[in-house]
Amino acid sequence: MPNTDAEARQRLLDALAEATDDLGQALASLGAAYEPLDDQQADRLEEQLFRPVQRAYGRAQRTQSEFASRYGLSAHEAAMPAPGVPSTGVKGFIENAMAALGRAETRLVATQDSQMAIEVGDVELRAGIAEVRRLIDGVSRDARSFVRTFGR
Picture 1 (cartoon, rainbow, N blue to C red):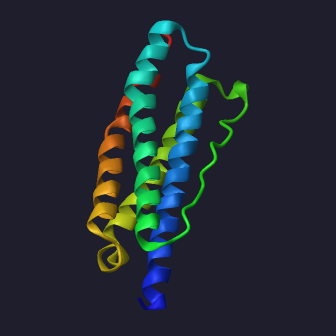
Picture 2 (tube, helix red, strand yellow):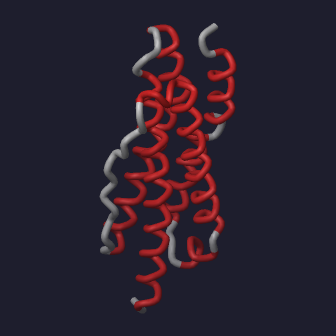
C-alpha cells in the first residue's frame, strides 16, 4: 500500500477522533447537567439528550477503533473531558453540550463528504459515520425544547 493511502487513512481517523472528542465533551456536559435535576427532569434529560449522545459516542469510538484495526493504524484513546464548573448551571451545561455536538456534526459532515473518505475509506467507516449522525439528529432540537421548558 502506498504511503499516501496510509497517511490519508490516518487523517480520516484523526478527523473522526476529533468528532468523537467533541461527542465526549457533549456527554460530559450533559452528565453535569443531570446532577442537580429532580427525578422527573433528570429522566427527561437522560432519555432525550444523554442517551442519544451516549450511543453516538460509543458508535463513533467503535467506528474509529475498527477502522484503525482494519488498516493497522493507531487509534486515538479518548479520555472523558471535564464538564466545567458547577456554577455553569443546567442551562449552561446543556448549551455547552450543544456547542460540542455542533462541532462534532460539522466534523462528521466534512469527513463523510470528503473525497478522502471515498478514496481511502471503506463502507464500514462511511456507515459508522452515517449512524453517528443519525443518532445525534434531532438532539439539538430536543435540547432547545428542554431548556425552554426547564423548571416548569
